[in-house]
Length: 602
Image (cartoon, rainbow, N blue to C red; front, top):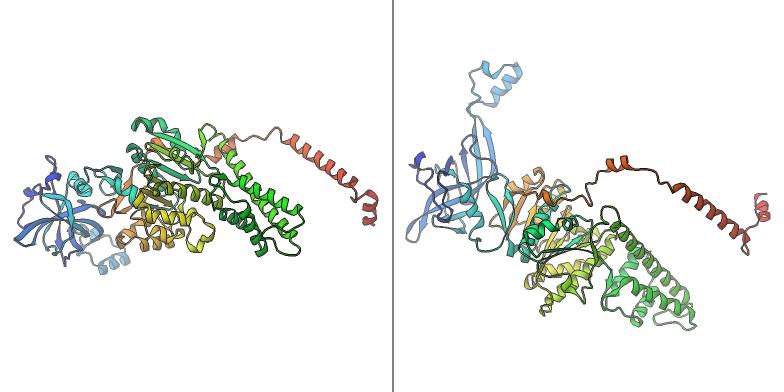
């Protein structure tokens, strides 16, 4: 931009497809000063004309093969300092020490200046904003800095993506009149991580993207450990009205085993019991050989068949396959007890899940048993369908096992290229549960190898992932490093902030400093879904909010609580049962009698 451009020429800049609407001008907001380079520059900002995060532009000439080329240099304000050259530190110290009012001196308190730093995003020619190229010639000092109109900025952000599907997520933090959209094709194929502390807005952001993808009819699978998304089912009429033909389905899991998937039972034994000795492990391997797992068989049913075989082995005189020589029955008995413990815990978790679904808040929701992913994967994944797998009631290990079996089976159905199911996107809430870092104990997370395979090979088969977590530093680095896009909302934990700086190659230091100060729903989005990193305000979908789980009013529940009228009856029955048991024990052969009790008392 030439130095002699007058104020009346402020509306001159034209980006062709981003031409300013009538009366909407390119406002002059500052002037470049100091040593300007090709990556950033400093400019003096006029009072109240722009703020942190605003996108600004300068017009200048650069060398070209045919002479000179006029370009636009786009930048984002990353820092602003305010100073008054006519109010030195010495004067401030004297005023403070003497208790003098500034108005009683000759010093000026109105001559302050604003010095802003701008990070250069790239350059475009005056006729094409679809191509954003790097700047290779330094910005000229004394050049005017302009505040572009909203439409010009919007065209810059979209950058030739008008013909592809978009995901509307919100607006720029600094400019609420400029919407921010993501590339839908790159979102579903290239993987994304949404990271934020509790209350930072990660679930709000995920719901916003889910809503947009429903509008495009894209198949979705949501792994939901705590019920953050089951409220979408209650909003199904609204979502189906926005996207005719869309279906929201709620599933509860059935823990299944696969062919040659006996390791699942071994891991469950290791997690739920005190472990196994080598002779016990050898016997269990022999048990697997005699009773192999079958694809899609219920884990509870399979463990039951192992227990029956172990009981049968104990009744035999000869040692079964895998049992140690000599006194082998204690080994088989111990293994049988371990299997019963696992069976009992799985049965209790299943009952807990059933009770949670039968609670007053969830009983009206239409939960279905998850179809067998081996035999009926197309009932889980199909166009226009959102499948929400609710894992409430199960512990972390079991949740990992359910997710691993489901995702691995669906991925294999895509990888075999037979077209059993279409491409799909998986939303993995509480991702640190399923892909913990090495220091968190990855040996128990059976889902890690499955998700690693999906995230490294998923692009070829159309199995994208959105990982959501409030503790980034607890995530497996191999998996997170494969994400091509990130949405980082508020994080205050120093370890999490350091981790984010490590995995995000294009996160600037100025953006990193913003992360702990973000408000709810504010964050930085970067990667392949956008042209360059952007501070965004996520749009809040208030009509999708639901209180099925989370944000309960416990004060209201305390006020409404009343004692159980049947509690006294149950207590009386319990005491009567204990008395009957005590009498039965005394009358049993070898049981204590009153005479023996008196002798012990003497």
